[in-house]
Image (cartoon, rainbow, N blue to C red; front, side):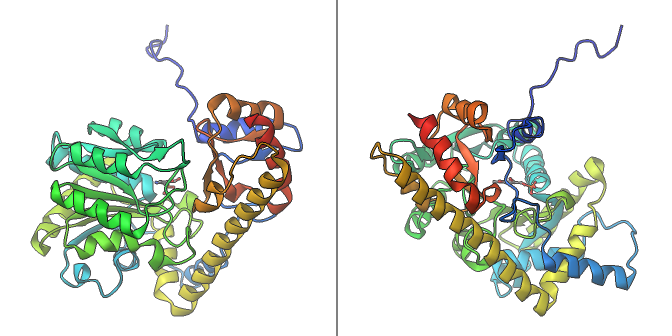
Length: 401
Ligand code: PLP
């Protein structure tokens, strides 16, 4: 009898499990709107031209594969903090940020969670309801207590701003407040600049620590600066804050696992100590991070021509998603005779749309229409083409009624 007999079957991952089910479906109308990965209008995966150019440069230079330091590639850590806060930010000039290369967004969040667990035991993390499915897993596995703040209002398919503020206010003083820097996942609903100011007021009042998850910088609006505005607003107030970054979406480096954790501290001295402890946490977990993606980012951002080309490609990707969003809205408005207002789709931003479809309705989308999506009613517009909008609209209208 196996020593592992007591291990039960784990359920499939609610997001990545969708792709597995999609692969097993042989219907030619099938659509995978589950995982958040950019596709071309032909629905093929996309490798950015700047990435190919950077990789060619790297090959020509014949760079070696020696271990990176625990904190990652210095050139990467420099540019990633500059992209986030702005190169002229006082935070960078005063060396108040501890930046450590992480295993993309997920690994960077996990490092921060371990830091909280070890050095601020008992501190709670507030997460939005709903949020990206992996947030709860990350804090659970790091043994960091969390609770939810209201965010989505099903009645308006918009932001429950009053509820959000009330819940942040009611949390124990000194809690961490996890915020999506832009393009909130799964809802696609972001606070307005005025609302961000009010959120910052309450966080400051309660001595909370803002903890940003920035997985879509430049990918939401097409502008790196516009998408970093929320983080910079908090940074400008002189607050200590945490920011996890990911290059999965904006540079299409999903499988390279490249990102960073940034801990902004009140002094350079504190930042140096925090950085030393982040390294100490990383060492027994994975020793040191992979080099390939870090070099790509450093090369793209460090070369003015490649940097500009990246921005253009990002605008292209964000633009394609905006076009699909518009077409889906048009198709739904034309096909649905119930009088339902679909304009919430146009108000959402980023690669996702939160449709408001219930679990049973989402099941109908998959079982009858072969449209694969997460059971919370989220669809990835990055996996949709203009050509498939009409079909998807038929599926949604049928599933709603
Ligand atoms: N955070 C959010 C909100 C996300 O949507 C994602 C990816 O979907 C991530 C973090 C992390 O992705 P990765 O680990 O590939 O960077």
